[in-house]
Image (cartoon, rainbow, N blue to C red; front, side, top):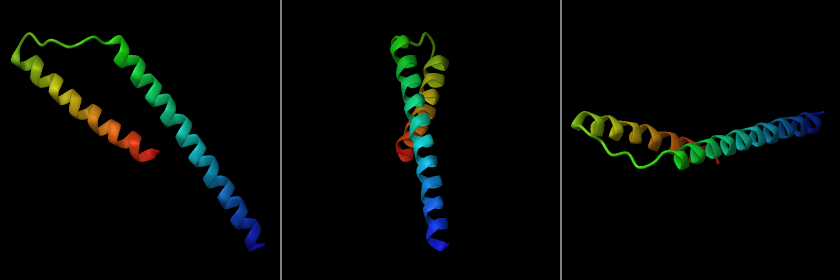
Length: 70
């Protein structure tokens, strides 16, 4: 009985890991697609440069989260 439950738990865990892997791959593909469409950003003002820098911090955090899921 316990062995059967352990087997079911392992199957559920494996399914969750597969789902996470698929979602992570899709996020990565979407991110790479967006990056390839976006050219180099050339700020016209200091405010634009600062805002762009803050966006890169968000990208860095997202990248860390994606890597942690692998």
